[in-house]
Length: 269
Image (cartoon, rainbow, N blue to C red; front, side, top):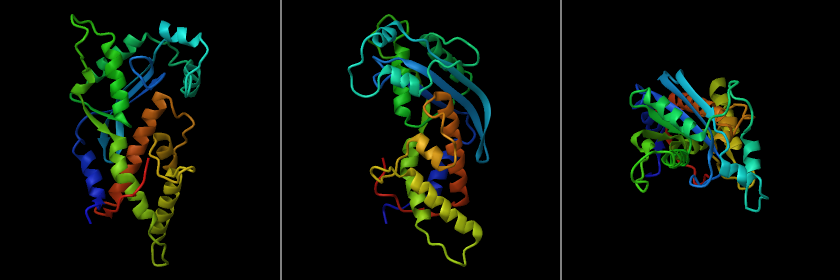
């Protein structure tokens, strides 16, 4: 059957990068348009993969001061659709202290991340839905670059190889969970095998949207289904830690179940 994939296909994606420095990163913003809405937080952690666990090499975490245009919009009544700036700031815990330091200008926060990445040789950038973070980082960085021709698009993050965990998990994780959860418990199975089936059923239930019944791979939902307390979700620093936890857990699950064929779920978000 052409739709069949394997656990080894998933493992191969990560194995080929085993000897590299991985930099998990996440951003928080005040909207979806990087030309209009500023970045408020950046977090990154450089690690090396040892077995199925990551060893930390270094980290970067800063929050940005509000720009004058942001403060101006905050002073005006909100009449748009979706979450307002104040709603987003509350959701991402904007305003809380960070390492007993002052927040920095957005330009300094962006430059700091580039300097952090530059301290490692050919790092692999890892993010959940990486296209959003990298588009934002490139666009906001371009606003501060000094150049003779402002129409030239200089996108420094395009130089890095990127692993988008959302894209990889869409292909493999729902299929893995569905395949394992559909197994039947039999009395001749070991206790470990029976517990594995029960866990997969619990994970599948945790991934399902209550409204649609479809599988959701939002980071917070995946992390929670795998046993992580997600009370700090939607802050960049927490989301980086959560993504590392998710990758470690999923790598371990796939390693134990190496060589298995998986039939993809038909629907997921």
